[in-house]
Length: 139
Image (cartoon, rainbow, N blue to C red; front, side, top):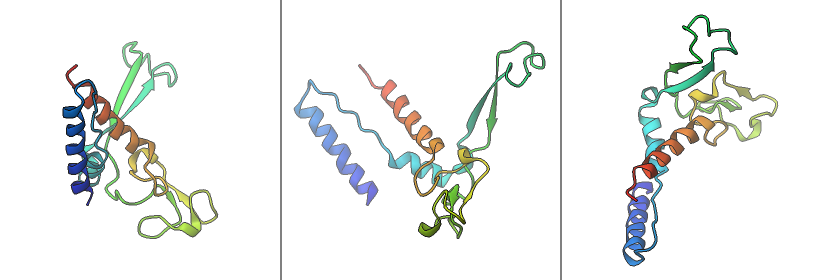
């Protein structure tokens, strides 16, 4: 259903561009990056930027100001929520995030879902894709 909807939406966006030459409409695909994460979670790396001074690593790394560490991608158990009330997907409406009986994962950046909603890491991956595609548009 989402694929069909998106194909119709892209066609409508093209039609607006054809009918109104002075208007620039850019299609932002939300579905494809989410499917990319679900299908290949470990392929999508996360970068952690660590300030050398903050962790006293500056002397360790030849006076470099910043150390960038690449960590593995999203968790393989991709449909499981980081924060929730147990069960296969760690999701339970009667024990939502912050309620008694709920648990929180160690590393939210490894999860697609926080509490049934996307995590900041998921939104960042999607937004980065949008921003990169906008930057590649011809002016």
